[in-house]
Image 1 (tube, rainbow, N blue to C red):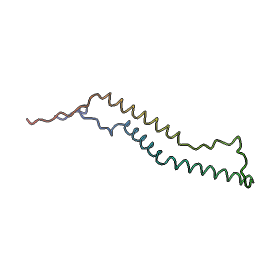
Image 2 (tube, rainbow, N blue to C red; image 1 turned 60 degrees about the horizontal axis):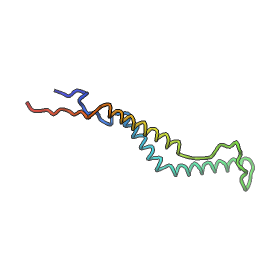
Image 3 (tube, one colour; image 1 turned 90 degrees about the vertical axis):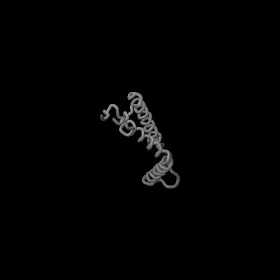
Length: 114
């Protein structure tokens, strides 16, 4: 007698919640590793852009005061950290709800020789 699909144990890799959780963890790990370097690079690019704007405006030597209408030059990975953190919470909650909904682990009945 072959076990039905209800008797088979669910594989963790079959759950989309698991993959969402894995994606969030890898994304957060990547931000921890590359985040500081990315922030330094973006700040350098902003400084270079301001220098180009000053040269184009004909300013030499000391840079002029920043314009009030200039957007804030704050470079941060906080929005990405927040996004991956939210995905981590949602994925964890979904995986936990899935495991509770399935109840205790079902086992495949052992086959006994006749």
